[in-house]
Length: 102
Image (cartoon, rainbow, N blue to C red):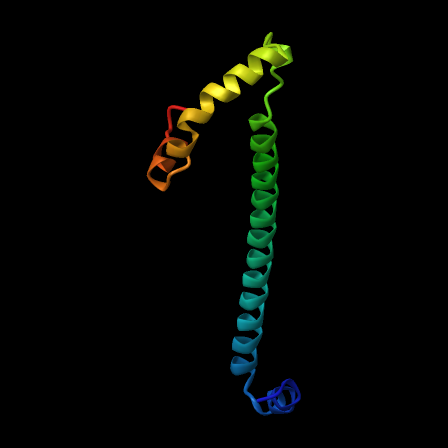
């Protein structure tokens, strides 16, 4: 049934029926406002998650010089870490990425 058909039928309703229709429309409007508020909250949460992901990406880039590690030391460290990189990249090692102690 279209909106225009519904509007044509309204005068045929009793006052109690029209009041019931009005109450239902008010109820639907309130639900719509609630949905909009929840969507806004979800959008805000998504924005916060985006910022957290950006912060995590920044965290992974470590400034070694500011930590007193020279370029030569970083090269040595990199070569020593390569020895277990293959094991670290295996799917079963992903459990360490999810370690809550980190």
